[in-house]
Amino acid sequence: MQALELFRDCYQIRDKDTLQKLCAMAEVLRYKKGEIYLHRGERQKHILLLWSGIVRGYYEDVDGSEHTDCFCSRRGMPAMPPCGLEEPSPISLMAVTDSEFVALPIRETMELAESSREVMHLYTGFLTESMRLHNRIKNTLCNYTAKQKFDWFLQEYPGLIFDINNRYIASFLNMTPETLSRLRAAGRRRRTGQPAAQEKRE
Image (cartoon, rainbow, N blue to C red; front, side):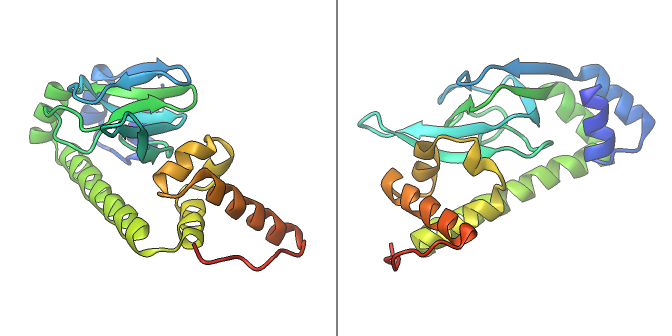
């Protein structure tokens, strides 16, 4: 049921034969909160499309410290690493909450894309959106102040601030957890109309 709803309602695939083939190939995979379903250096086994939940991509530096690279939270987003389908993953992927995915076998799906205009259009759309998102992230992290990065995060990922550990978000935005906590507190004060001390530029 998830596969049909995803392909038909979310991706707007209309060809009945294509829908039937995609649904026949698809399976639903579930991962528990905190479960790492792809480790850095591993190759993907499926094309994973998010149905519900939140995914975090991260990597470790030479000292073993984790750095958050990306989040995936919108239904229909590919919950996959930023690399070719057959390449080793440059990051690890973890379910931040209990999560469900519609999974497609890589080889069969790419063979279908060669004969289906809708599937090829969907695939190229994923690639384009991924490129745009990573460019937005890079521009934000390099050029914005801490407050601007925090405001961007609230707009780009609505609601995630309440579901994700502060440490993950701070790492993603390249700021300390203490700075993030101050920004969250200042935001609460603004929403409630409470007076706040003048904020310093981060």
